[in-house]
Image 1 (tube, rainbow, N blue to C red):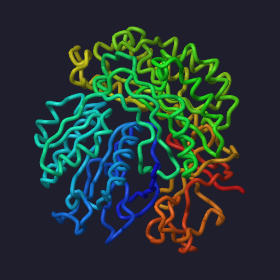
Image 2 (image 1 turned 180 degrees about the horizontal axis):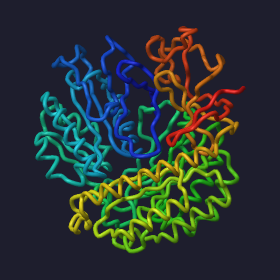
Image 3 (image 1 turned 120 degrees about the horizontal axis):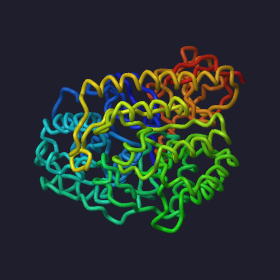
Image 4 (image 1 turned 90 degrees about the vertical axis):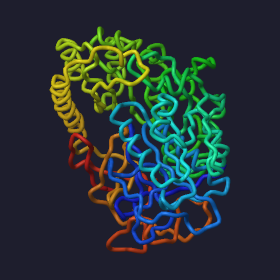
Length: 525
């Protein structure tokens, strides 16, 4: 399997940038050239929301090879799709373009989880349609709302999240002026596709598509359909291959990791037991798991988390509300009591465990009492990360037909919730002051090193030693691990411009500061 590593660009400053463990709306990737400090996006969206510079010159790049530009939005599964689409194109003779106005064809992998996100998608689709280049719209939005997408861009070809095996066929047809629509869920397993990793040390591996839930507010089920778990052996082989090619973080992702395997006679706990047996220096980040599927797995999950240093002590279990009445209207399939019990068991066994959850504010008919129950729950349990969003009706869902609460009331509740979230996050981060231990450097942004400790806490390194500066030799072999000769590709030390900061180092740090967002530290060995 061919894999290439690529870099990122922020307003002309070239740097590596990693993904965050939540919805990701804006990431820019670079081509391996940095001519004239252009905003060189190749794989995914622009860094700043709504502020994109697509360049000034129309026309195609002066090269016989066809070229492509690709943007991606949404969750880690969407970015995995970006990697695989880009990998297939590169393997079939396409090169990555510097500019959507100069490419042979443009692609966008969309998200439809919220109306705010949908508005961003509409804006980007319109912008990419302006230059009359062939356009392929992929991801959840065309599958969830075909009429909307065709209204915005009638001539674009459309590809669903489970149709990426049709990438080359769809792209070639679009280049020949033929519109293609492929939204059906094929039987493909998104394993062993060639890919271009967004971050050279992070491997995003999809373990399933679709889910078993029937949440009344969620449009993702409409886009991705019922659960299709991928076979354990193929997932393990993918991890082995990615570790060999330099991956240090393995992200296991899907629509809902909690229900993984229930259609093929296994479960997530069994998969993780097999994953941690793989040899190599890497850690696994387990993606979102809905609470209703975890109850019978808790003992096995706890055992694996406790006894393996290959799993980040991080768990993302979205509760959405602390009110049993609201949860029933959401058709979540779990109770607030179930969520509380899961958190209790993990915290009793691992007090420093990083727990993430999601909250929807202002679900239809949510009363003041319902909202207060949510506030009490998060105040009592203190999840480290709380991803909060205001309810937005998604077309085709049951909740979109329900009566919405007053908008001003929604804003007041949201503001109050966010204030409490900040307080909780800062309190949880304060526990880490003066902690000493190892972190894995998985991000370099504007010359600052960032990493994760074993509990997946983000740490900015304020002071580091010169032994982190590694000479990178010129290497024209694209299979090598992020080595390039161009001195503009990597951030450099002001004291040694011949050296390059590299990702994937493990260093020992002491935490010297904190905020509600992250920790600050200095290297101590």
